[in-house]
Each structure stands twice: as C-alpha cells, then as structure tokens.
Amino acid sequence: MPTRTARTAWNGSLETGEGQVELTSSKLGTYDVSFPKRAADDANGATSPEELLAAAHSACYAMQFSAVLGGAGGTVEALDVKADVSLGADPAGGFRLTAIHLTVRGEVTGLDNDAFIAAATEAKDTCPVSKALTGVEITLDAQLEA
Image 1 (cartoon, rainbow, N blue to C red):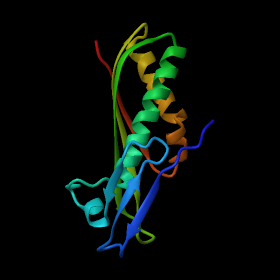
Image 2 (cartoon, rainbow, N blue to C red):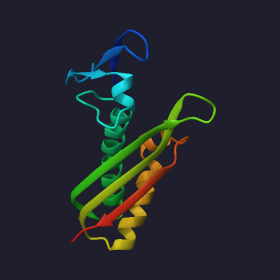
Image 3 (tube, rainbow, N blue to C red):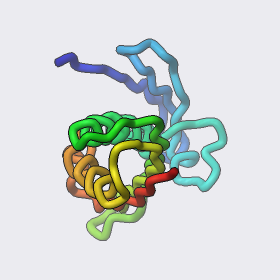
C-alpha cells in the first residue's frame, strides 16, 4: 500500500506565527494554518489539524461503511458522512482532541434499519482512521433514509 505525504512550512511563534499545509502526494493544494484561527470559532479562510482529521475520518469512514454494507448484502445508493472533530484543553496541560462525532445518512437497499445501524457501528470500529484515533471518544449518529 502507498504512503501519502503532506508537509507544513511554519514561520513564527505559536501565538503570532502562521504556516501553509501542502498536500504533497496529490498536489491538490496548499492551505493556510495559524493557531489563532485554529482556536477561533470562525476559521476565517484557514484550515486546521482538526479539519484535516475530520476530512480524513469522513472519507475513510464512508469507504469502510460502503465495504461493510456491501459485505452485509446491501447496495449503497448514497452516503452522506460528516465528521466533527473537537479540540479542547488537556487536563495535563496544553490541548487535546476531546471528541469526534460521525454523522451518516444513507440510502441503501437490501438491508433493514437494524442491519444498517449494525454495519454503521462496525464501520466506525474498523475504519483505519478510527483505529488510529483510539485515544479519542468517537460517537456515531447513523440513519437509514428511504
């Protein structure tokens, strides 16, 4: 399996510095980062490690859920996955990821609601990004739509 690469160029202190994250493997773009924008309610045009993790987690989960649903006999018409990654104070000092909440809405044929929820939970537990983030509580809201 391949290794994917991103890099960050940073200048200055935590409080006043800023940087750019480059998606090196895909060459899809370079994105601004700064701690003040990371800690603010409005990202104001900058991304953050939490947003990048949310993107990675939602994409990974969608792929894993699709595989689990197929293995259970379902046919995926559409999945809409959102990941919310929260940053907060660490009691030991500094900051930490405090929670990840996955929300998925799916149009799937061939499975009833119970099978859909079971597959959603299995995918949450077996997604490679979920496995990498075992130190953070990951919650799930899954709903089968008609």
